[in-house]
Length: 268
Image 1 (cartoon, rainbow, N blue to C red):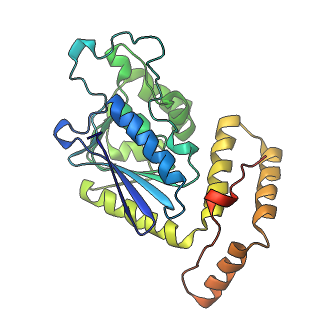
Image 2: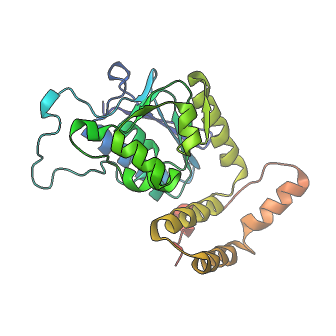
């Protein structure tokens, strides 16, 4: 068992961090399994949205500390990366929703920050406390947290390692919604299913890529305008652009036909 469970239903894939007795404490094996699942699901045209969650009662309690003081021993050459999930969620072409249904600490929180949308449990504990363990935040947290919440909030969270709850996570911009823990996954699934039915897969892929590439590369307005124009020209006149209008006028669910596996091209 690699600690990651994948369930697919009605074009939504749910990836569950699945070591509940250890509060889903994260291992290298889990990181490899999660990256492999991301790659496989991103290539599957029958999957349109991914939801990342944890087996109750937690989302992810952080790194597995079962090795005690040896947990952060120096690694052998070539054996370690501070970004243990490859590719990160933001590099996928499909929307990724983090249903943070319980405590998310350390790498639990930093992995959630790689998702496109985060829904969190209001009374759970959140922290990125690596500086309190003599190491530093991981999984690109110095970039994702600063992009989501700004430099001041990122410094507050990353340099202190302090705890906060779901309400503060929303106030800081680290999450979009906070709910009672048992409502988090249902809300994420409802959102995922709405996207899976009503959002054209190629449109979502191009919009997501443009959103994250703008954050990564710091594109200015002229560059964004050019890339938006390129995306529009690529889609306009295509079958899904016509289908979107037809479905809206007929008040029915759209039937999208574009296939990322065959037709995807990165923006230039």
